[in-house]
Length: 160
Image (cartoon, rainbow, N blue to C red; front, side, top):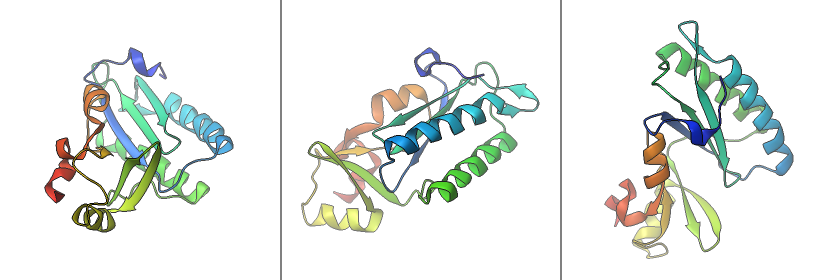
């Protein structure tokens, strides 16, 4: 069952898929339809899941399940990963590679492989106050409070 993201409980589980490039407006329109179709049919152990999604900054797909109603199982999560893999193939993008970092560079979003980002920290091209995206958050509340944070307040701080 697809619902408005804001109506999900704060404890709802989230998965964030970061794209290696920005989606075009037409891609966002089609991807939104694809995600909605997937989420409407997504089940765990035969039970419908209370789900939602966001596409943020034309680069991040956020999928959420309110586990107060029904929890996503290993099989249902595998189904979601296969769906995301299908999006990767269809749009020729990377969504599952966790070894990349997105951060704000002025009013723009930048995307770098983790190794390059670590070098940028060493070279002071980014600093403790650079806003980074912590794609490891696991709940809606964490997403809303700790997804966009200064580097010094994220797991990326270990590079400082």
